[in-house]
Length: 303
Image 1 (cartoon, rainbow, N blue to C red):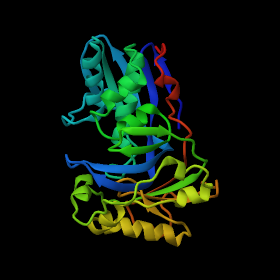
Image 2: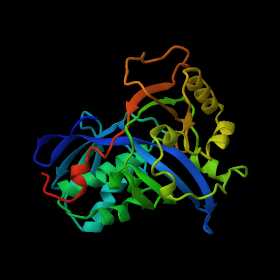
Image 3: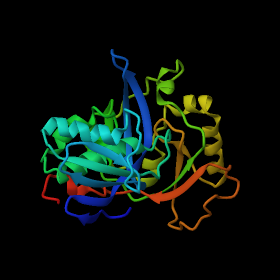
Image 4: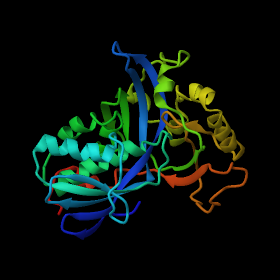
């Protein structure tokens, strides 16, 4: 991914918001409040969105397009929510203009919106000099979505609970081919499905440690995938397409994107590979060892 570029004091471009995949996703139970208990490995990819941020002396938060024109945004815009939450928590009187360069598709299970919000929290914590530590940022991040704290912590991780228990882990390097059908899947529909498996046996992190890379990538399954394939048949079609390439596919998160590991570093491929339906996205990438903004995670002076 691109490195952040300082344009001027308090004005940065190309702040990376990487995608993630779930190498597996097990639903191991359900809490009394209806929230599902999960176990998963979250792995960041060198593919994602980019955020431009310019600090302002006025306290307003503005989302702009690339021509610096204000946008009409829904109330649930996560970048604006993240900035507003940090403002309220710290009492800063500074504001910001935020421009988002979207590359990750919606309803994909790649964490795009959550990653965008985390990048805004990490960057503004530095640019506003609010000085919150990682735990304090995560207490804000969880209010924005279950996946946001993972990106704030900035490391591949074994994730448990409803996403709040995050144990950093080192993962071997791998290449990943992501296929995203045009159709998406609504996450609430998956978790409401009566035939969703909710009793996969829990594992300990030690069960994963010491596995060979091949065994690690093959480990487990995605409990959401069978339900997603019923609601969105294109998920199964995408898996079939990757299988025909000689790969072993799996859905990421709540879908509808699917992925497969491949061993070659040859990224020379058509923008629209042969046989892939029109409108479907194909992207080859590698995993990241840590978040591209890792140097911004521990509060320091960044102007």
